[in-house]
Image 1 (cartoon, rainbow, N blue to C red):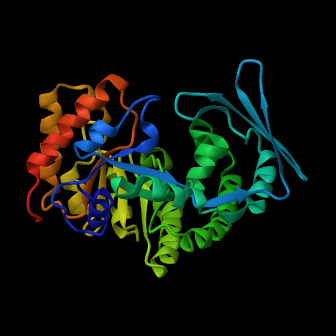
Image 2 (cartoon, helix red, strand yellow):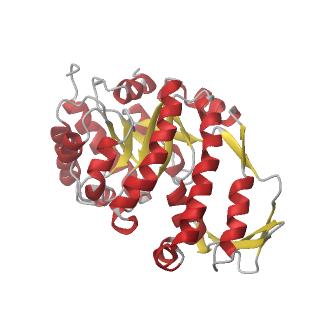
Image 3 (cartoon, one colour):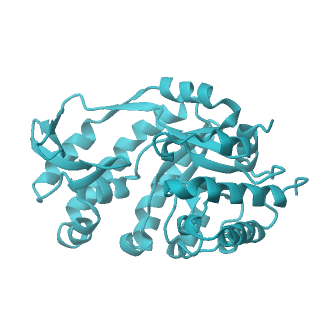
Amino acid sequence: MRDQRQEIELALGGGAPDYVPFTFYDRLFPQGFDPAPLQAKGMALCARRTVYRKVLPNVKVREVKESDGNVRTIYDTPVGTLTSLYRPAALGMTPLERPIKTRDDYRVAKFIVEDARYEPDYSTFLAECARIGNSGKVIAETCYEPLLDVEITWLGQERYCYEVADNNDAVFELHEALAKNHKKMYEVVAASPADYVLYGGNVAPEMLGPNRVRDYVCPCWNTFSDRLHERGKKIGVHLDGNNRLILDVVRNSKLDFVEAFTPPPDCNVSVAEARAAWPGKRLWINFPSSVHIESEDTIREATLEIVRQAGDRKGVLIGVTEDIPREHIERSVTVILDTLRECGGPKL
C-alpha cells in the first residue's frame, strides 16, 4: 500500500515520488460522499487544521441568529461596538455586512486587533494526524496576511477599493496593527507540531496592486518564514488566482511552496511559466476547476499537459482545493489518477 503522507512530504521537500501526489481537501467532500474508492485508486487527503486558539480577553463577542436565518456577530469593546452579518452557505458562511462601515469604526477594529492573543491548541491537529495516518497530510492553517485580512474580513473587496482612496491612512494603520499582532501568532505556530504551514492567500494582484503585494504582503510572508525556518518548518501560501503580476514577488520571497496554484484555463500563469519563474519553490497545483466537468479525454489531456510542463516533477503535487459538482467528482478524479499512474515510474 502506498504511503501517501511520505510521498507528499517527499514532493514538498523537493523530491520526485514515483507518482505525482494527488490530494483532495478532506472538507470539500459533499455530505455523504465516500472517498474510500478514490483513495484505493491513489487519491490522498489533505487536511488543513489550526494549531492555536485566538482569544479576545477584553472584547465581548456575541452571535445572534436573526429571523431570516442570517447570523449577526456583535463585538462589544470599551471603545465601541462593531457588527457583521453572515448568511449560512453550503461551504461556510457568506458575508453580507463587514465590521467596518465608517471611518470611526477603524478605532474599534484596531482595539480588537491589538487585544487578540494566541493560545497553543494542538489537540485538533494531532488528532487529525492520527486519523489520517499515512493516507494523506495534515498541514497547519493560520489566517489571512494583515492586508488581506483588512481587505477580505474587515472591509470586503469592493469597499476596500474605495477605502484605500478615501481613508488610506486608516487602512494601513489597521494593517500595521495586524502585522505587529501576527508576530505573536508566529511564535505559537513555530512551536507547534506542524512541519508545513499555510499563511493566507486568495491574493488578487489586479485589485491589491503588485506593489502593495511586494511592500506589505511579502514582508509578512518573509517574517513568518524566518521564524518557521529557525524551527526547520516550511511555509506556503494559497495563491489560487492570476499570479502573473506577482511572479517576481513570489520568486524573491522566502516562501517554500505555493499551494492551490491554478493554471489555465482558469488562471493566467501556466505550470511551465511558474516552474521557470519560481526555481526551488515547490508547486502544489489545483487542478483547474472548470476542467472537472469536461469530457474524460479533455481531463486526461489537461493532466498530461500539467505533468509535461512540470518537467522533472521534482517538488510537484496536484490536488483539488475547490469544490466540484458532486456528480463529477468520481469520474474526473478517476481519470486524473489513472493518467498520473500512467505517467509514473522511477523517480526522475
